[in-house]
Image (tube, rainbow, N blue to C red; front, side, top):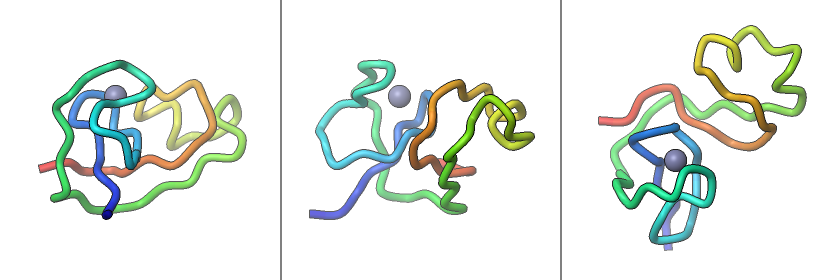
Length: 61
Ligand SMILES: [Zn+2]
């Protein structure tokens, strides 16, 4: 089963709903995988509004 990206917070998951924000609007059509190890000190995390480490995508269509 392929991973899906949350359209709300861009978190990457294999679940049917986002474990981060509980949204069920997931998409398999995404681009730009970002792996955050240190979200607090990451410029990308700040831009995306992400506070937790994990795997995210830049764009969800
Ligand atoms: Zn989410």
